[in-house]
Length: 193
Image: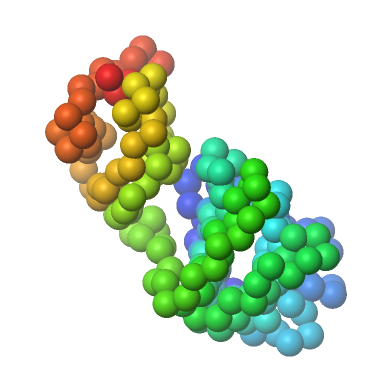
């Protein structure tokens, strides 16, 4: 059977005619798919920007609207990534496509391990943007990070966010690393200054 792991703050919609000609779902957010092979009914993941078509494989799709990109990474098998009628890439195991929503440009890499660390609640951020950091904090702790400091909002972050640690412990670690302070605001967000 097919397994789908849905990340926090994500939505998966299943087509009403699922399984008749294909197995079509729509994704907002992030999910890891382990798709059972079925040559007669391809599995299709639709996002706001791209479609990912597979016959049987395991792969991750990150399509949070708060991020400027859509990322598709393949663990096993192959996927076909399209935008409208244009094929952007056919990715095999270790292949990753990063599609920039603003420019329409794609970057393809090979030999990349699929990052599905979010399933276990321990996310390793490497050279992450502030938008990526914000999304991981929101997914892990249900809080929003805010800052008006361009050093923070334009910064790159290397940090492990572990669900087993409190948000305060992780905020302390983050602010020590970047030499900043934070405060908790009334609505539950954390402001980095």
